[in-house]
Amino acid sequence: MELIDSPELKLKKIARELASHKIELHQIRGYLQCILQNSNDMIFATDVDGILVSFSKGGEKVLGYSWEEIGGYFVKQLCVDPGTFDEIMAMAQEKESAVRLEFPFRHKKGHTVFCDVSLINLTNSKGQRVGTVGVCRDISRWKKLQDDLMRIDRLAEIGRIASGIAHEINNPLAIISEASGWVSEVVEEAKGLGSEEREEIEKAIRQINEQARRCRAITHPLLGLMRDPIPEKKEFDIHELLKETIRFLMPELKYTSIEIVFNFSNEPLLINSDPKMIEQVFVNLISNAVYAVKEKNSDEGLIEIGAYKSDSNIEIKISDNGTGIPEDKQNRVFSLSFTTKPPGKGTGLGLFMCQNIIKKLGGKITFSTQWGVGTTFTIQLPLS
Image (cartoon, rainbow, N blue to C red; front, side, top):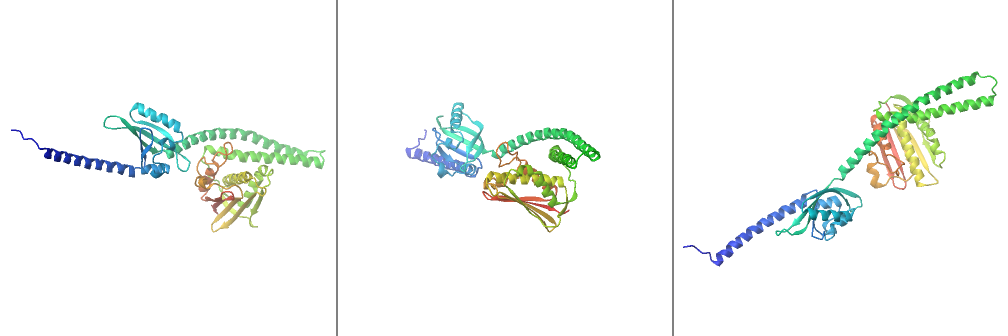
C-alpha cells in the first residue's frame, strides 16, 4: 500500500524548498553585491532601453560619478560618442554574446577615460533579453604608454635625421671658419687699405666667425641626440655663461620689450662642470620664459636671472612674469613630450632633457609657478 502525502506535508516540503532557494538567492545576491562593491572595474547593468539600473563602486572611481548622480540615466550619456555606443549596444544584442572593444567615456571632471569594454546580454529564465551588463576596465594609462612609445619612436627617428643634418652642416662651417681666418690674415698684410675700410672688413670677419660659432652651438646638441654624452667638466664662471646665453638669444629678444635683469655678485662664481650641457639647459629655460612673457602680451615683461653660492652648491634662478603654468598641468612639467605650447611651437622635449642633464651633472631642478603671475625655475649644481 502506497503512502500518500497529505496537503499539509506537501506544503511543508514546498516551504522548505522555497526557504532553501531564498537562502541560496540571498547568498548569490550577497556575492554579486560584494563583487560590485570591491571590483576596481566599472560594472553596470541596464534595462532593455539602455537605462542604468546598477553601477559599481569601481565605476565611481573610474568616472567620478556616484550612483545617486547617474541612477536612471541612459548609459550612453557617460560616453564621449553616444551615437557610436548605441550602435555597439545594438551589435551586442544581435550577437547575443559578449562584445569586447576599446571605448572612450567622459569623466565627471571632463577628461576622457579609455576603457576595455565587454558587453553581455542579460536574459531571464525564458531566454528573453531584459538588459545589458557592461564590464569596463580603465586602460587610460596603458593608452598613454602606447602613445608615448609611438612618440619616442618618432622622436628617435627625428634625432637620427637631425644628427645627420648637423654633421653635414658642420663640414661647411669648418670651411667658412678657415676661410675667414685666411681672409683676416690677408687683410692684416694688405697694403693700400684705409683705416675705415680695414676696420669694416675686420668687423665683417668677426661677424662671420660669430655666426659660425652660433651654428656650431646649435648643431652640437643635435649631434648629441644619437649618443649619451659624457660630461666634459672644466672650471668656468657661471655668471659669464648666463650672459653668453643671453647674447646667444639676443636675436629672439631684440624685437621684444622684455627686460633682462641679472642678480649677480661682483666676484666670479666658479663651478667645475660641463659648460655646454649647462648652456643647453639655460637656452631652453630662458627661451621658455621669453615665450611665456610674450604670450601674456604685457608691456612690462621681465625675466630675472640670479646665481649665488649656497653651501656646497651653486643655485641659479630664472624667473619670469609670464603666463605661468596651469595647476592641472604642473605635475607633468618634466614628463616626456609634455608642452603647454600649441602644435608646431614645442616638442615637449625641452624640460625633459633639462632634467636629465641636471641629474647627469649631479644636481636637481625644481620650479614654482602661479597661473597668470609667472614661473621660477631653480637649478642646484654641485661646486665640484
